[in-house]
Image 1 (cartoon, rainbow, N blue to C red):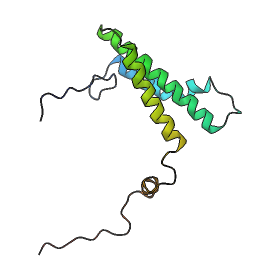
Image 2: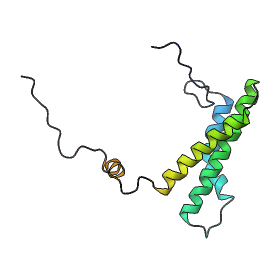
Image 3: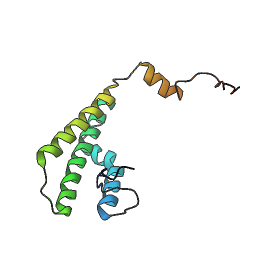
Length: 124
């Protein structure tokens, strides 16, 4: 194993329960309730999904700020904002259904690419 690999310190990192990690999980669990505070019942499911994604993006940005403050390091606003914007954009693309109707989506919905029963070659 390469000893030069640097693992990110995430607040929800497995095996290391922290207050920040537990708070992150609690807020993530409550995200639909929090997002509902900013929605109207007449909005389409698509618009509600975008609001939920936006609230999740704000949560990630604030979480990055709190982790930096807790670690006593300077918060890099530009890098954090860029990362959140890229993640939000990817989530919106998936929400729009970029893969809708493609073979990849259909394979995922069917539970795999392989159809029928697998055949084994005999080792003769």
